[in-house]
Length: 374
Image (cartoon, helix red, strand yellow):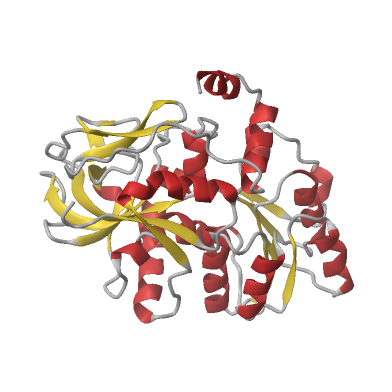
């Protein structure tokens, strides 16, 4: 195990990017470590004793800081970034801590002295950056059951959603919403290409694009995933693992106005060529960013807009975060968009969930459910 840790720790940026690509293609798993041993005490957190050795340890949450809300978690979302954090290969956003479990839903147990929007007993959703104590975010406060979160990161849960459904919102729905609405300004009648569309962000983007009234084109990596998209009513579905999708789209006369991109390297550049004049390209994959890959500006000659989106940076702009969440919450409450497909795991199965995420074979989102009595 120690040899494996040293090996990965010494990888170059290109080698780390290759590892990320293998993980996404289902060719590698989270390295095996010690078995997870969760305490029955509800005030525990999930951490790594060594870079890839997942274990649990108890800690006292304490009273929340003046600007914080204490939450008893009922559900937490699992994202691919959690795999990268577990492997210590996540390209960190500036001034944003990298703790696993960025999506939370739960019940407020305490509030700080300056908190005005919440009271104990409120059902909430949170975009989590980690447990806060004495003005600092605690590193390695992964998958905490009870934690203190800044008020600006917490929102009232849409009433008709279960906790496990609400935990789907922060990362995947906020990413899809900000990409399509704020970055791309997708309009009714427009055409959007959603790459790897059976993932959490992809399925959320389908919900949002349908609400807007846009035409949807999609890609996915396996025949089973492509069949699922066809079952969802998407007429044009292509292979995300081959550049053939570009030629096939041209043959079908498909010219997207917007591309929500998760592909890297040559496949990303092939996608850029597909956009019509003044199209919008929203890139949410970090592989090329992590390796500082070049982007030839000639690809933008049709007046294209290129956006790189890391939704965690919304924490640096609370006004945008609050307005985006409010719009999403109103759509959920009106029934205009629905929760995406998900698979839930018990709290003692966090390791299994992260391993499943690393394989890339699942559809939709993975969620951890906590026992309310835990």
